[in-house]
Amino acid sequence: MNNGVGLGGAYDATLERIRTQDGEKAKLALVTLMWVCHSERPLQVEELCHALAVEIGSADFDPDNVPLIATLLGCCQGLITVDKEASTVRLIRHTIREYLSAYPNLFPMAHSIITKTCLTYLNSQQVKKLPPYPVPDDQDMPFLKYSSTH
Image (cartoon, rainbow, N blue to C red; front, top):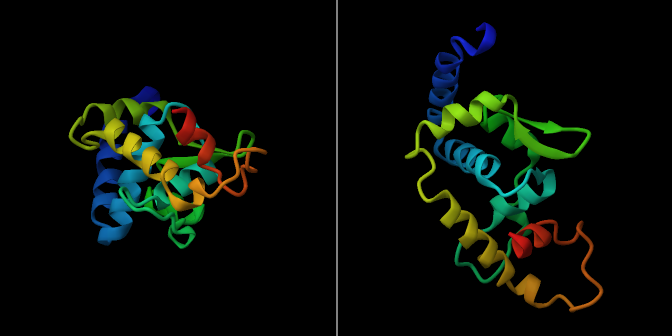
């Protein structure tokens, strides 16, 4: 596996392990990988967790839906990690992005899903109830900055 030779087989096997997890774990892993691969910038841990909790089209954001980062790391079978220095979630190797991009049907309409997620979050009752100033603390609404900017 030196210099990337043989990584494709390892990634194939890992993707297969992801797909054979129980339905919710497999779905969560694929959506997580979609966000990590297609977000406009690296996401902070809490941003990603909150993005994954959004139910597209829902008027409310349910904080009980926010997954733990440990759950995401486990579901993704070692393909993602937390960059401790930047507190962002990233792929463990840049070659994973290249590998995943070779399968365009893996994340169909990724940018559309990300856009709908951001708009749903921005239209949630929790965001609508926020006062215009001061800007809410990132800890209260960690996905607000990303969803309003991107």
